[in-house]
Image (tube, rainbow, N blue to C red; front, side, top):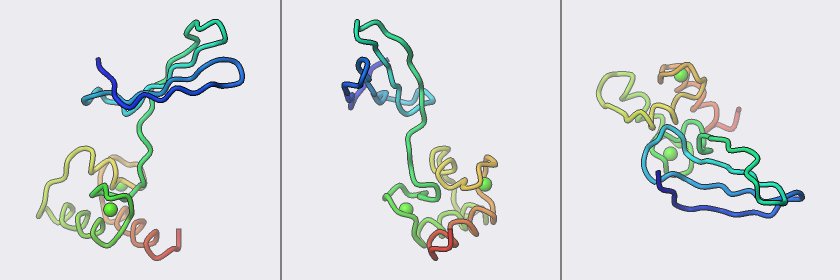
Length: 111
Ligand SMILES: [Ca+2]
Ligand SMILES: [Ca+2]
């Protein structure tokens, strides 16, 4: 496994290194925590933070994302697993009209 974009931070009692894997390993970052003696204390794998509803990954939730979701629901377009994960705003594993509603409410500033 290779990593890119590693960030090393000094903490109160040691060091924390956070890296993103180069390639798809089913997680988006790994955080390794060291104590003052530089013994590895823990490693945690986390999914990257993205904006729920940002299907096209441009950093914001807009009508473009809603359109992608609607076309996916209608069977007009396929989305990648990553896009489905982004668009699945209620976390039930797929993009449905409920997610479109949440995205619309988000865009409208209601949520
Ligand atoms: Ca977007
Ligand atoms: Ca959903």
